[in-house]
Image (cartoon, rainbow over all chains, first blue to last red; front, top):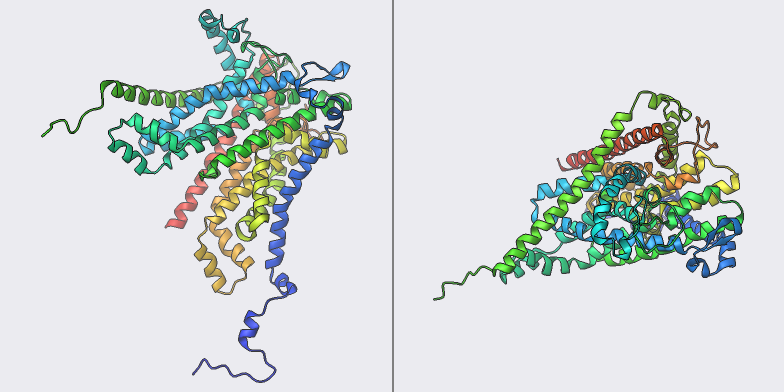
Length: 329
Length: 288
């Protein structure tokens, strides 16, 4: 009875008033649409910034791109005085140091992740992972400092003994002066190991317990369960962590430039000094005289950008299936 | 009845098992050991080189003892303030957009571009801001350095804001709407306050992350031997000072580099720990 609505002609029904679609002005007045537009502007400004970044890299490398074309990447002469720019020594150095860093970091990082996910008690595992992740926050210039004053003296001390046995191999031949591809790769490996450990551990922990139980029921040992069931199941996520580590290693600047020696040459021996793309940009950018020189350096930046974007995209693709909590980093 | 229903695996498999598991333990030991060595070595050297003058004086000329990096400490604080002013508002707005408004292709585009921007090598970001700010202005400046760091802050600020807002239960939003609040009122009075500890944590970790960036500052803020008044002069900063002093041939400068590394890292780790404490406090409040 009390719910009966008495309406007089000309007065809108309550339902009509409640459910009529609001006009834009009304919504704006209430603030919803204004907030929507404001936050949208925030979101879209990121697209604008990224678009500008790509445009500027492309536009400000114009002269070098036109002058050298694809030969820029495969010629080895870097002679600013005579206006000759070939990036091969830097490309080579970047690829060699990054791959070597991965070769050093993957087994150790994966081993540690296996221990932390499968063997260690959860409290120990969490504490160690917290420590490892905290150290991922150490700035690269501090790693460079450690590289110069701790790593290089240590390597210089142990290298002669090492070369006595392996010096006949072309990659270990020659005199070791400290600054080298090898030193750069070691410092890079130390820098990317935390990424591999923390992501791989999470991926391993996400493997369903039933997978382990089934393998155990077949009489497998702990290691067989881990290596033949858990790791293959988590393969995609682990690959993703490796690609993320690779992208980071390729773009790493400060630590590498402080220990690689900064010599634009191509050497088979890992004991020789070299150069990387990021390092040459950091070292020569503010000294670049003339537009061609500047554009050549920016083209190097463009190359680095393109390569890291592709590798990051691959990593994202691989990790789509795995939801990792990146906020903690 | 056979007695050997439960049989041990053959010896070879048991040996492999123990060997490989031990090896994985050694890997962990190696990783943690190397990282601890680095930390302790830095703390040891840094604490040794640290003096009061380090905080209060300008750099001394080569050969003269003493001197400090007052200008670099102030420079880093100015750069970080500017970066926060640029990066955090955009990150917050974008995060609110992705979590509360965006759907379909627009949300996908913003999210994807953010991840893209997050992966840009820091040295490339330096080049970008050089062409964007330094070239038109014809000189290096605190402003340019702050913009470079600010852009680098956006992706993490945005994604952490989005994640923490998303973690707010749907029922809270519905409660707000059911009480007659508009969507924006619900967002600002219910959703954001519920996620505020997480958002703050994300921002602090973000600041800590860019505080150590060196490469983008080399061609934007550049460096300065003296104090840098205002925002349009080149300025010194701790990371760049560490770099320049570390690669110099002078022992006294190496000492300063260690001290600067110590101060920078202590600051970063302190901020990281405070951030995690804030998050833990937020969790405690919301659970009981």
